[in-house]
Length: 560
Image 1 (cartoon, rainbow, N blue to C red):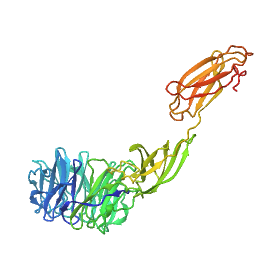
Image 2 (image 1 turned 120 degrees about the horizontal axis):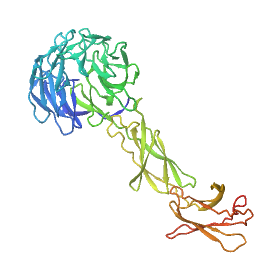
Image 3 (image 1 turned 135 degrees about the horizontal axis):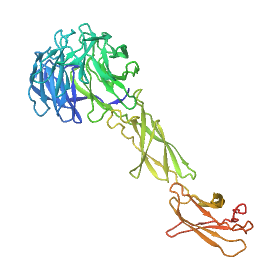
Image 4 (image 1 turned 180 degrees about the horizontal axis):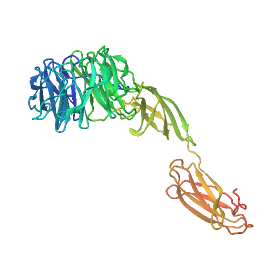
Protein backbone atom coordinates (compact mmCIF):
# COMPACT_ATOMS: atom_id res chain seq x y z
CA UNK A 1 0.00 0.00 0.00
CA UNK A 2 1.05 3.59 -0.02
CA UNK A 3 -0.02 6.72 1.76
CA UNK A 4 1.55 10.03 2.55
CA UNK A 5 2.53 10.47 6.20
CA UNK A 6 2.83 13.23 8.75
CA UNK A 7 6.30 13.79 10.16
CA UNK A 8 7.23 11.96 13.36
CA UNK A 9 6.63 14.18 16.40
CA UNK A 10 7.65 13.74 20.01
CA UNK A 11 4.96 12.78 22.52
CA UNK A 12 5.61 15.44 25.16
CA UNK A 13 9.30 14.54 25.39
CA UNK A 14 8.49 11.15 26.89
CA UNK A 15 11.34 8.70 27.44
CA UNK A 16 11.80 4.93 27.81
CA UNK A 17 14.45 2.41 26.78
CA UNK A 18 15.83 2.48 23.21
CA UNK A 19 13.31 0.66 21.00
CA UNK A 20 11.18 -0.24 24.04
CA UNK A 21 7.46 -1.05 23.69
CA UNK A 22 4.89 1.76 23.96
CA UNK A 23 1.33 0.68 24.79
CA UNK A 24 -1.52 2.69 23.21
CA UNK A 25 -5.22 2.37 24.09
CA UNK A 26 -8.04 4.47 22.56
CA UNK A 27 -9.23 7.22 24.92
CA UNK A 28 -12.05 9.40 23.62
CA UNK A 29 -10.85 10.86 20.35
CA UNK A 30 -7.20 10.23 21.18
CA UNK A 31 -5.05 7.62 22.99
CA UNK A 32 -3.73 6.79 26.43
CA UNK A 33 -0.06 5.75 26.29
CA UNK A 34 1.78 3.72 28.93
CA UNK A 35 5.48 2.80 29.25
CA UNK A 36 8.27 1.99 31.67
CA UNK A 37 10.83 4.78 31.85
CA UNK A 38 14.65 4.33 31.95
CA UNK A 39 14.44 3.83 35.72
CA UNK A 40 11.58 1.31 35.56
CA UNK A 41 8.88 3.76 36.66
CA UNK A 42 5.45 3.35 35.07
CA UNK A 43 4.06 6.41 33.30
CA UNK A 44 0.94 7.31 31.34
CA UNK A 45 -0.21 10.22 29.21
CA UNK A 46 -3.16 11.44 27.19
CA UNK A 47 -1.62 11.71 23.72
CA UNK A 48 -2.96 15.17 23.04
CA UNK A 49 -1.22 18.57 23.01
CA UNK A 50 -1.21 20.17 26.44
CA UNK A 51 -0.99 16.94 28.44
CA UNK A 52 2.16 15.65 30.12
CA UNK A 53 3.42 12.30 31.36
CA UNK A 54 2.15 11.19 34.77
CA UNK A 55 3.68 8.57 37.02
CA UNK A 56 1.71 5.55 38.21
CA UNK A 57 3.32 5.29 41.66
CA UNK A 58 3.94 2.41 43.98
CA UNK A 59 5.86 -0.16 41.91
CA UNK A 60 8.71 -0.27 39.42
CA UNK A 61 9.62 -2.75 36.74
CA UNK A 62 12.55 -3.45 34.45
CA UNK A 63 13.54 -0.28 32.54
CA UNK A 64 11.74 -0.20 29.17
CA UNK A 65 9.52 -3.18 30.06
CA UNK A 66 6.11 -3.69 28.50
CA UNK A 67 3.12 -2.29 30.37
CA UNK A 68 -0.13 -4.00 29.37
CA UNK A 69 -3.21 -1.75 29.40
CA UNK A 70 -6.86 -2.58 28.69
CA UNK A 71 -9.75 -0.11 28.58
CA UNK A 72 -12.74 -1.21 30.67
CA UNK A 73 -15.73 0.70 32.02
CA UNK A 74 -14.31 4.15 31.23
CA UNK A 75 -11.00 3.46 32.95
CA UNK A 76 -7.80 1.55 32.27
CA UNK A 77 -6.52 -1.63 33.89
CA UNK A 78 -2.74 -2.07 33.87
CA UNK A 79 -0.71 -5.27 34.26
CA UNK A 80 3.05 -5.67 34.60
CA UNK A 81 5.77 -7.91 36.02
CA UNK A 82 7.69 -5.81 38.54
CA UNK A 83 11.41 -5.79 39.31
CA UNK A 84 11.03 -9.02 41.28
CA UNK A 85 8.99 -10.69 38.52
CA UNK A 86 5.71 -10.65 40.49
CA UNK A 87 2.59 -9.86 38.42
CA UNK A 88 0.72 -6.73 39.55
CA UNK A 89 -2.35 -4.82 38.40
CA UNK A 90 -3.64 -1.27 38.86
CA UNK A 91 -6.62 0.66 37.51
CA UNK A 92 -8.05 4.15 37.00
CA UNK A 93 -7.15 6.87 34.46
CA UNK A 94 -4.25 9.31 34.14
CA UNK A 95 -4.68 12.60 36.04
CA UNK A 96 -7.41 11.14 38.28
CA UNK A 97 -5.23 9.11 40.70
CA UNK A 98 -4.82 5.35 40.70
CA UNK A 99 -6.27 2.63 42.89
CA UNK A 100 -2.86 1.22 43.78
CA UNK A 101 -0.88 -1.81 42.63
CA UNK A 102 -2.10 -5.20 43.85
CA UNK A 103 -0.64 -8.65 43.27
CA UNK A 104 -2.50 -10.96 40.89
CA UNK A 105 -2.66 -14.13 42.99
CA UNK A 106 1.10 -13.87 43.61
CA UNK A 107 1.87 -14.89 40.03
CA UNK A 108 5.52 -14.54 39.05
CA UNK A 109 7.68 -14.56 35.94
CA UNK A 110 10.93 -12.79 35.03
CA UNK A 111 11.26 -9.05 35.79
CA UNK A 112 9.51 -6.96 33.13
CA UNK A 113 8.17 -9.96 31.23
CA UNK A 114 5.19 -9.23 28.96
CA UNK A 115 1.72 -10.10 30.27
CA UNK A 116 -1.05 -10.85 27.75
CA UNK A 117 -4.46 -9.65 28.99
CA UNK A 118 -7.79 -10.24 27.21
CA UNK A 119 -11.21 -9.08 28.46
CA UNK A 120 -13.18 -12.14 29.55
CA UNK A 121 -16.72 -11.90 30.91
CA UNK A 122 -16.50 -9.25 33.64
CA UNK A 123 -12.77 -9.73 34.18
CA UNK A 124 -9.60 -10.59 32.25
CA UNK A 125 -7.73 -13.69 31.21
CA UNK A 126 -3.99 -13.27 31.77
CA UNK A 127 -1.18 -15.24 30.14
CA UNK A 128 2.59 -15.24 30.57
CA UNK A 129 5.53 -17.64 30.28
CA UNK A 130 7.55 -18.60 33.36
CA UNK A 131 10.78 -20.53 33.79
CA UNK A 132 10.90 -23.39 31.35
CA UNK A 133 7.18 -24.05 31.63
CA UNK A 134 4.73 -22.99 29.03
CA UNK A 135 1.70 -20.74 29.36
CA UNK A 136 0.58 -19.72 32.82
CA UNK A 137 -2.93 -18.33 32.92
CA UNK A 138 -5.34 -16.84 35.40
CA UNK A 139 -8.76 -15.29 35.54
CA UNK A 140 -8.04 -11.91 37.15
CA UNK A 141 -10.88 -12.24 39.64
CA UNK A 142 -10.57 -12.83 43.38
CA UNK A 143 -10.84 -16.53 44.14
CA UNK A 144 -9.15 -17.74 40.95
CA UNK A 145 -5.54 -18.85 40.88
CA UNK A 146 -2.86 -19.32 38.24
CA UNK A 147 -3.05 -22.45 36.10
CA UNK A 148 -0.35 -24.03 33.95
CA UNK A 149 -0.88 -24.77 30.29
CA UNK A 150 1.32 -27.87 30.17
CA UNK A 151 3.32 -29.48 27.41
CA UNK A 152 5.71 -26.81 26.08
CA UNK A 153 9.13 -25.56 27.16
CA UNK A 154 10.39 -22.15 26.11
CA UNK A 155 12.58 -19.24 27.14
CA UNK A 156 11.70 -17.84 30.62
CA UNK A 157 9.66 -14.63 30.41
CA UNK A 158 9.07 -14.95 26.68
CA UNK A 159 5.90 -13.44 25.20
CA UNK A 160 2.82 -15.56 24.58
CA UNK A 161 0.28 -14.45 21.96
CA UNK A 162 -3.35 -15.03 22.95
CA UNK A 163 -6.56 -14.53 20.95
CA UNK A 164 -10.14 -15.06 22.08
CA UNK A 165 -12.36 -16.92 19.60
CA UNK A 166 -15.88 -17.68 20.76
CA UNK A 167 -15.62 -19.16 24.25
CA UNK A 168 -12.04 -20.35 23.98
CA UNK A 169 -8.55 -18.91 23.68
CA UNK A 170 -5.90 -19.79 21.14
CA UNK A 171 -2.30 -19.42 22.30
CA UNK A 172 0.84 -19.20 20.15
CA UNK A 173 4.46 -19.38 21.34
CA UNK A 174 7.98 -20.15 20.12
CA UNK A 175 9.46 -23.04 22.13
CA UNK A 176 12.97 -23.46 23.46
CA UNK A 177 14.16 -24.48 19.96
CA UNK A 178 12.35 -21.62 18.19
CA UNK A 179 9.66 -23.89 16.74
CA UNK A 180 6.15 -22.40 16.57
CA UNK A 181 3.38 -24.10 18.58
CA UNK A 182 -0.29 -23.43 19.29
CA UNK A 183 -3.00 -24.67 21.64
CA UNK A 184 -6.57 -23.75 22.53
CA UNK A 185 -8.83 -23.94 25.57
CA UNK A 186 -9.87 -21.78 28.52
CA UNK A 187 -8.49 -21.22 32.02
CA UNK A 188 -9.75 -23.79 34.54
CA UNK A 189 -11.57 -25.66 31.75
CA UNK A 190 -8.74 -27.56 30.11
CA UNK A 191 -6.38 -27.18 27.17
CA UNK A 192 -5.76 -29.10 23.97
CA UNK A 193 -2.22 -30.46 23.45
CA UNK A 194 0.31 -28.05 21.93
CA UNK A 195 0.66 -28.69 18.20
CA UNK A 196 3.38 -27.52 15.84
CA UNK A 197 2.63 -24.97 13.14
CA UNK A 198 4.40 -26.88 10.34
CA UNK A 199 8.02 -26.00 9.65
CA UNK A 200 7.81 -22.57 11.25
CA UNK A 201 10.82 -21.43 13.22
CA UNK A 202 12.15 -18.31 14.87
CA UNK A 203 14.43 -17.75 17.85
CA UNK A 204 13.59 -19.38 21.22
CA UNK A 205 10.79 -17.40 22.85
CA UNK A 206 10.59 -14.89 20.00
CA UNK A 207 7.40 -12.81 19.63
CA UNK A 208 4.67 -13.90 17.21
CA UNK A 209 1.97 -11.75 15.63
CA UNK A 210 -1.45 -13.35 15.11
CA UNK A 211 -4.78 -11.99 13.82
CA UNK A 212 -8.09 -13.69 12.97
CA UNK A 213 -8.41 -14.67 9.29
CA UNK A 214 -11.71 -16.19 8.26
CA UNK A 215 -12.27 -19.25 10.45
CA UNK A 216 -8.56 -19.45 11.28
CA UNK A 217 -5.62 -17.18 12.08
CA UNK A 218 -2.79 -15.52 10.18
CA UNK A 219 0.61 -15.78 11.90
CA UNK A 220 3.69 -13.64 11.24
CA UNK A 221 7.26 -14.20 12.45
CA UNK A 222 10.82 -13.11 11.85
CA UNK A 223 12.87 -16.25 11.25
CA UNK A 224 16.43 -16.96 12.52
CA UNK A 225 17.83 -15.01 9.55
CA UNK A 226 15.49 -12.05 10.01
CA UNK A 227 13.23 -12.94 7.08
CA UNK A 228 9.55 -12.15 7.48
CA UNK A 229 7.12 -15.05 7.01
CA UNK A 230 3.37 -15.58 7.22
CA UNK A 231 1.06 -18.59 7.36
CA UNK A 232 -2.61 -19.44 7.63
CA UNK A 233 -2.79 -21.57 10.77
CA UNK A 234 -4.82 -24.30 9.08
CA UNK A 235 -3.56 -27.77 8.10
CA UNK A 236 -2.37 -27.84 4.50
CA UNK A 237 -0.98 -24.30 4.39
CA UNK A 238 2.73 -23.48 4.43
CA UNK A 239 4.81 -20.45 5.35
CA UNK A 240 4.84 -17.63 2.79
CA UNK A 241 7.71 -15.14 2.58
CA UNK A 242 7.05 -11.41 2.74
CA UNK A 243 9.99 -10.41 0.54
CA UNK A 244 12.08 -7.31 0.17
CA UNK A 245 13.43 -6.48 3.63
CA UNK A 246 14.76 -8.27 6.70
CA UNK A 247 14.75 -7.46 10.39
CA UNK A 248 16.64 -8.59 13.46
CA UNK A 249 16.40 -12.40 13.83
CA UNK A 250 13.31 -13.06 15.93
CA UNK A 251 12.32 -9.39 15.71
CA UNK A 252 8.84 -8.08 16.41
CA UNK A 253 6.32 -7.99 13.53
CA UNK A 254 3.14 -5.96 14.08
CA UNK A 255 0.05 -6.84 12.05
CA UNK A 256 -3.43 -5.31 11.88
CA UNK A 257 -6.35 -6.36 9.66
CA UNK A 258 -7.47 -3.66 7.26
CA UNK A 259 -10.81 -4.25 5.55
CA UNK A 260 -10.85 -1.10 3.46
CA UNK A 261 -13.31 -0.49 0.56
CA UNK A 262 -10.64 -0.36 -2.17
CA UNK A 263 -8.82 -3.61 -1.45
CA UNK A 264 -10.76 -5.63 1.16
CA UNK A 265 -9.25 -8.37 3.30
CA UNK A 266 -5.69 -7.11 3.52
CA UNK A 267 -3.21 -7.05 6.38
CA UNK A 268 -0.93 -4.17 7.26
CA UNK A 269 2.53 -5.23 8.49
CA UNK A 270 4.97 -3.03 10.39
CA UNK A 271 8.52 -3.72 11.53
CA UNK A 272 11.88 -2.09 12.21
CA UNK A 273 14.36 -3.55 9.75
CA UNK A 274 17.96 -4.63 10.30
CA UNK A 275 19.10 -1.04 9.73
CA UNK A 276 16.66 0.42 12.26
CA UNK A 277 14.25 1.88 9.68
CA UNK A 278 10.51 1.71 10.39
CA UNK A 279 8.82 -0.06 7.46
CA UNK A 280 5.36 -1.15 6.44
CA UNK A 281 3.67 -3.19 3.71
CA UNK A 282 0.22 -4.59 2.96
CA UNK A 283 -1.13 -7.70 1.31
CA UNK A 284 -2.28 -11.24 2.01
CA UNK A 285 -0.37 -14.49 2.44
CA UNK A 286 -0.23 -16.43 -0.86
CA UNK A 287 -1.62 -13.43 -2.80
CA UNK A 288 1.35 -11.09 -2.83
CA UNK A 289 2.63 -8.08 -0.93
CA UNK A 290 3.22 -4.45 -1.77
CA UNK A 291 6.74 -3.06 -1.61
CA UNK A 292 7.97 -2.06 1.84
CA UNK A 293 7.82 1.68 2.45
CA UNK A 294 9.01 3.84 5.34
CA UNK A 295 6.39 6.04 7.02
CA UNK A 296 8.17 9.40 7.12
CA UNK A 297 11.57 7.72 7.55
CA UNK A 298 10.97 6.73 11.16
CA UNK A 299 13.84 5.07 13.06
CA UNK A 300 14.17 2.77 16.06
CA UNK A 301 16.40 -0.14 17.05
CA UNK A 302 16.47 -3.22 14.74
CA UNK A 303 13.58 -5.58 15.51
CA UNK A 304 11.88 -3.15 17.93
CA UNK A 305 8.09 -3.16 18.25
CA UNK A 306 5.95 -0.67 16.31
CA UNK A 307 2.68 0.12 18.08
CA UNK A 308 -0.25 0.52 15.66
CA UNK A 309 -3.35 1.99 17.29
CA UNK A 310 -6.70 2.20 15.48
CA UNK A 311 -8.30 5.61 15.62
CA UNK A 312 -11.19 6.01 18.06
CA UNK A 313 -12.74 8.61 15.76
CA UNK A 314 -12.49 7.07 12.28
CA UNK A 315 -12.90 3.40 11.49
CA UNK A 316 -10.01 2.92 9.09
CA UNK A 317 -7.56 5.44 10.54
CA UNK A 318 -4.54 4.43 12.62
CA UNK A 319 -1.62 6.01 14.44
CA UNK A 320 1.92 4.70 14.98
CA UNK A 321 4.04 4.99 18.11
CA UNK A 322 7.70 4.01 18.56
CA UNK A 323 10.60 4.49 20.93
CA UNK A 324 13.55 5.77 18.92
CA UNK A 325 17.20 4.66 19.34
CA UNK A 326 17.59 7.12 22.24
CA UNK A 327 14.34 6.07 23.94
CA UNK A 328 12.32 9.11 22.85
CA UNK A 329 8.63 8.44 22.20
CA UNK A 330 7.41 9.51 18.75
CA UNK A 331 4.19 9.26 16.76
CA UNK A 332 2.95 9.65 13.19
CA UNK A 333 -0.22 9.00 11.20
CA UNK A 334 -1.33 8.99 7.54
CA UNK A 335 -1.61 12.44 5.96
CA UNK A 336 -3.48 13.94 3.01
CA UNK A 337 -1.59 14.18 -0.31
CA UNK A 338 0.51 17.30 -0.83
CA UNK A 339 -1.03 20.33 -2.48
CA UNK A 340 -0.65 20.31 -6.31
CA UNK A 341 1.48 23.01 -7.91
CA UNK A 342 1.49 24.88 -11.22
CA UNK A 343 -2.24 25.52 -11.73
CA UNK A 344 -2.68 27.29 -15.08
CA UNK A 345 -5.23 27.99 -17.82
CA UNK A 346 -4.68 25.87 -20.94
CA UNK A 347 -7.43 27.14 -23.26
CA UNK A 348 -10.85 28.78 -23.43
CA UNK A 349 -13.45 28.13 -26.12
CA UNK A 350 -17.18 28.50 -26.76
CA UNK A 351 -19.32 25.38 -27.02
CA UNK A 352 -23.00 24.54 -27.35
CA UNK A 353 -25.42 25.00 -30.23
CA UNK A 354 -25.48 28.73 -29.70
CA UNK A 355 -21.89 29.00 -28.46
CA UNK A 356 -23.41 30.16 -25.18
CA UNK A 357 -21.16 28.06 -22.88
CA UNK A 358 -17.43 28.52 -22.30
CA UNK A 359 -15.25 25.40 -21.99
CA UNK A 360 -12.13 26.28 -20.00
CA UNK A 361 -9.31 23.73 -19.72
CA UNK A 362 -7.08 24.06 -16.67
CA UNK A 363 -4.01 21.99 -15.75
CA UNK A 364 -1.50 21.54 -12.91
CA UNK A 365 1.51 19.44 -11.94
CA UNK A 366 0.46 15.89 -11.02
CA UNK A 367 0.93 14.64 -7.44
CA UNK A 368 2.69 11.24 -7.52
CA UNK A 369 0.66 8.34 -6.13
CA UNK A 370 2.44 7.09 -2.99
CA UNK A 371 1.96 3.36 -3.68
CA UNK A 372 0.26 0.63 -5.62
CA UNK A 373 -3.11 0.58 -3.85
CA UNK A 374 -4.28 4.13 -3.45
CA UNK A 375 -4.31 6.51 -6.38
CA UNK A 376 -4.63 10.28 -6.46
CA UNK A 377 -7.49 12.26 -7.94
CA UNK A 378 -8.22 15.97 -7.91
CA UNK A 379 -10.99 18.28 -6.77
CA UNK A 380 -11.42 21.60 -8.60
CA UNK A 381 -13.59 24.05 -6.61
CA UNK A 382 -15.07 26.94 -8.65
CA UNK A 383 -16.11 30.15 -6.91
CA UNK A 384 -18.06 33.10 -8.28
CA UNK A 385 -18.20 36.32 -6.27
CA UNK A 386 -16.97 34.47 -3.20
CA UNK A 387 -19.63 31.75 -3.31
CA UNK A 388 -19.05 28.14 -4.32
CA UNK A 389 -20.48 27.67 -7.83
CA UNK A 390 -19.49 24.00 -8.23
CA UNK A 391 -16.78 21.38 -7.80
CA UNK A 392 -15.33 19.41 -10.72
CA UNK A 393 -13.10 16.35 -10.37
CA UNK A 394 -10.45 14.68 -12.49
CA UNK A 395 -8.29 11.55 -12.40
CA UNK A 396 -5.54 13.28 -14.40
CA UNK A 397 -3.83 16.64 -14.04
CA UNK A 398 -6.23 18.42 -16.42
CA UNK A 399 -9.90 19.31 -16.14
CA UNK A 400 -12.55 20.89 -18.40
CA UNK A 401 -14.83 23.43 -16.74
CA UNK A 402 -18.22 24.54 -18.08
CA UNK A 403 -18.66 28.27 -17.49
CA UNK A 404 -21.42 30.57 -18.70
CA UNK A 405 -22.44 34.12 -19.47
CA UNK A 406 -19.12 35.94 -19.50
CA UNK A 407 -18.67 35.87 -15.72
CA UNK A 408 -15.31 35.61 -13.93
CA UNK A 409 -14.57 32.60 -11.72
CA UNK A 410 -11.91 31.77 -9.13
CA UNK A 411 -10.55 28.26 -9.71
CA UNK A 412 -8.27 26.22 -7.40
CA UNK A 413 -7.26 22.54 -7.15
CA UNK A 414 -6.84 19.99 -4.34
CA UNK A 415 -5.35 16.48 -4.33
CA UNK A 416 -7.15 13.60 -2.60
CA UNK A 417 -7.05 9.82 -2.39
CA UNK A 418 -9.46 8.16 -4.83
CA UNK A 419 -11.09 6.34 -1.92
CA UNK A 420 -12.07 8.91 0.67
CA UNK A 421 -12.51 6.41 3.53
CA UNK A 422 -9.04 4.95 3.82
CA UNK A 423 -8.03 6.07 7.23
CA UNK A 424 -6.88 9.62 6.59
CA UNK A 425 -8.62 12.29 8.63
CA UNK A 426 -9.39 15.30 6.39
CA UNK A 427 -8.06 13.38 3.40
CA UNK A 428 -7.83 16.23 0.86
CA UNK A 429 -4.86 18.53 0.50
CA UNK A 430 -4.99 22.26 1.00
CA UNK A 431 -6.20 24.16 -2.08
CA UNK A 432 -3.60 25.61 -4.41
CA UNK A 433 -3.67 29.39 -4.85
CA UNK A 434 -6.56 30.16 -7.15
CA UNK A 435 -6.43 31.53 -10.68
CA UNK A 436 -9.13 33.69 -12.31
CA UNK A 437 -10.88 32.35 -15.42
CA UNK A 438 -13.27 34.60 -17.36
CA UNK A 439 -15.91 33.03 -19.58
CA UNK A 440 -16.32 34.34 -23.13
CA UNK A 441 -19.04 36.96 -23.74
CA UNK A 442 -22.17 35.58 -25.34
CA UNK A 443 -23.73 37.30 -28.39
CA UNK A 444 -27.55 37.19 -28.28
CA UNK A 445 -29.08 34.96 -30.96
CA UNK A 446 -32.05 35.99 -33.16
CA UNK A 447 -35.32 34.37 -32.07
CA UNK A 448 -37.15 32.37 -34.73
CA UNK A 449 -40.39 30.44 -35.21
CA UNK A 450 -41.11 27.49 -37.50
CA UNK A 451 -44.30 25.52 -38.20
CA UNK A 452 -44.79 22.05 -39.70
CA UNK A 453 -47.82 19.92 -40.45
CA UNK A 454 -47.73 16.65 -38.52
CA UNK A 455 -50.12 13.67 -38.81
CA UNK A 456 -51.97 12.68 -35.66
CA UNK A 457 -54.44 9.93 -34.88
CA UNK A 458 -57.97 11.11 -34.03
CA UNK A 459 -60.20 8.07 -33.40
CA UNK A 460 -62.78 7.32 -34.68
CA UNK A 461 -62.07 9.60 -37.63
CA UNK A 462 -58.64 8.17 -38.35
CA UNK A 463 -55.70 10.29 -39.35
CA UNK A 464 -55.95 13.99 -38.72
CA UNK A 465 -53.29 16.69 -38.92
CA UNK A 466 -51.95 19.35 -36.65
CA UNK A 467 -49.66 22.32 -36.84
CA UNK A 468 -46.47 21.92 -34.73
CA UNK A 469 -45.08 25.33 -33.83
CA UNK A 470 -41.49 25.57 -32.57
CA UNK A 471 -39.70 28.61 -31.17
CA UNK A 472 -35.91 28.88 -30.83
CA UNK A 473 -33.36 31.28 -29.29
CA UNK A 474 -35.75 33.11 -27.00
CA UNK A 475 -34.71 34.10 -23.51
CA UNK A 476 -34.50 31.34 -20.92
CA UNK A 477 -37.71 31.13 -18.86
CA UNK A 478 -39.20 33.89 -21.03
CA UNK A 479 -42.97 34.22 -21.44
CA UNK A 480 -44.29 34.11 -25.03
CA UNK A 481 -47.90 34.63 -26.21
CA UNK A 482 -48.84 32.45 -29.25
CA UNK A 483 -51.93 33.08 -31.43
CA UNK A 484 -52.96 31.32 -34.66
CA UNK A 485 -55.06 33.54 -37.07
CA UNK A 486 -57.13 31.46 -39.54
CA UNK A 487 -58.56 32.99 -42.78
CA UNK A 488 -60.01 31.62 -46.03
CA UNK A 489 -58.27 32.68 -49.22
CA UNK A 490 -60.37 35.12 -51.22
CA UNK A 491 -62.47 36.06 -48.22
CA UNK A 492 -62.02 38.95 -45.94
CA UNK A 493 -61.54 38.60 -42.22
CA UNK A 494 -59.94 35.91 -40.08
CA UNK A 495 -60.49 34.00 -36.88
CA UNK A 496 -57.89 34.11 -34.09
CA UNK A 497 -57.07 31.09 -31.97
CA UNK A 498 -55.03 32.11 -28.85
CA UNK A 499 -52.85 29.27 -27.61
CA UNK A 500 -52.03 30.97 -24.35
CA UNK A 501 -48.85 32.21 -22.72
CA UNK A 502 -45.92 29.76 -22.77
CA UNK A 503 -42.70 29.77 -20.75
CA UNK A 504 -39.59 28.93 -22.72
CA UNK A 505 -37.08 26.30 -21.67
CA UNK A 506 -34.70 27.20 -18.84
CA UNK A 507 -31.92 25.40 -20.74
CA UNK A 508 -32.02 26.89 -24.24
CA UNK A 509 -34.98 29.30 -24.52
CA UNK A 510 -37.04 27.07 -26.85
CA UNK A 511 -40.77 26.23 -26.82
CA UNK A 512 -43.14 23.82 -28.56
CA UNK A 513 -46.90 24.12 -29.03
CA UNK A 514 -49.46 22.26 -31.21
CA UNK A 515 -52.53 23.69 -33.02
CA UNK A 516 -55.18 21.33 -34.44
CA UNK A 517 -57.49 22.57 -37.26
CA UNK A 518 -61.00 21.31 -38.09
CA UNK A 519 -61.99 18.91 -40.87
CA UNK A 520 -65.14 19.97 -42.78
CA UNK A 521 -65.02 16.82 -44.92
CA UNK A 522 -64.82 18.76 -48.20
CA UNK A 523 -61.81 17.69 -50.30
CA UNK A 524 -62.45 20.62 -52.63
CA UNK A 525 -62.39 23.16 -49.85
CA UNK A 526 -60.59 26.37 -50.52
CA UNK A 527 -57.20 26.99 -49.05
CA UNK A 528 -57.30 27.96 -45.39
CA UNK A 529 -54.16 30.03 -44.71
CA UNK A 530 -52.92 30.15 -41.10
CA UNK A 531 -51.31 33.22 -39.64
CA UNK A 532 -49.08 32.68 -36.61
CA UNK A 533 -48.70 35.86 -34.64
CA UNK A 534 -46.48 36.14 -31.52
CA UNK A 535 -47.52 39.18 -29.57
CA UNK A 536 -45.95 40.63 -26.44
CA UNK A 537 -47.79 40.03 -23.21
CA UNK A 538 -47.85 42.37 -20.27
CA UNK A 539 -44.64 42.78 -18.25
CA UNK A 540 -42.33 42.62 -21.25
CA UNK A 541 -42.99 39.51 -23.36
CA UNK A 542 -40.69 39.01 -26.37
CA UNK A 543 -42.05 40.47 -29.66
CA UNK A 544 -42.01 38.24 -32.70
CA UNK A 545 -44.40 37.61 -35.57
CA UNK A 546 -44.38 35.41 -38.64
CA UNK A 547 -46.98 34.47 -41.25
CA UNK A 548 -47.47 30.98 -42.63
CA UNK A 549 -50.08 29.84 -45.14
CA UNK A 550 -51.66 26.42 -44.88
CA UNK A 551 -54.12 24.56 -47.11
CA UNK A 552 -56.83 23.05 -44.95
CA UNK A 553 -55.68 19.42 -44.65
CA UNK A 554 -53.19 17.16 -46.41
CA UNK A 555 -53.03 16.28 -49.16
CA UNK A 556 -54.78 19.62 -49.73
CA UNK A 557 -52.66 21.65 -47.31
CA UNK A 558 -49.23 23.19 -47.56
CA UNK A 559 -47.12 25.58 -45.54
CA UNK A 560 -45.77 28.50 -47.53
